Length: 103
Ligand SMILES: [Zn+2]
Ligand SMILES: [Zn+2]
Ligand SMILES: [Zn+2]
Image 1 (cartoon, helix red, strand yellow):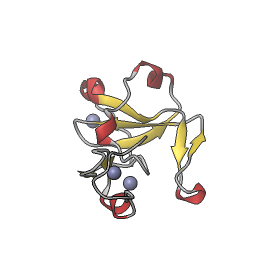
Image 2 (image 1 turned 30 degrees about the horizontal axis):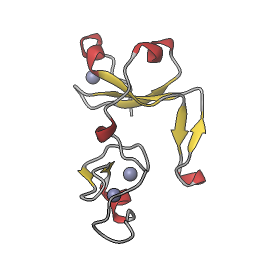
Image 3 (image 1 turned 180 degrees about the horizontal axis):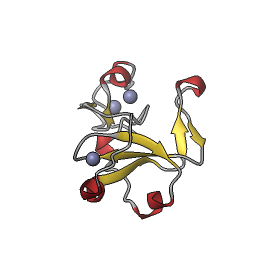
Image 4 (image 1 turned 30 degrees about the vertical axis):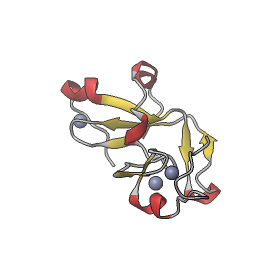
């Protein structure tokens, strides 16, 4: 996706994944990378960049990013209240439904 180029949106930019990426090719484990994933909460743009401005941007609120793939989370686990996208939530289970989540 193209980067947000509207300077007026800049205050709405946050960093989803800082200098790393999550790839399906390695099982969504965090892999160090010079690139960070930035999100504009005004227009919804998501892009990857290694520009210096990333250092000045805040981290995205955790509930906005899927815990598993760091994509946009559109739902949350009813048990542990972590944010997940629909796909990852399907694969997300707790042993002993209703017991407190650890970690
Ligand atoms: Zn924008
Ligand atoms: Zn996900
Ligand atoms: Zn859960």
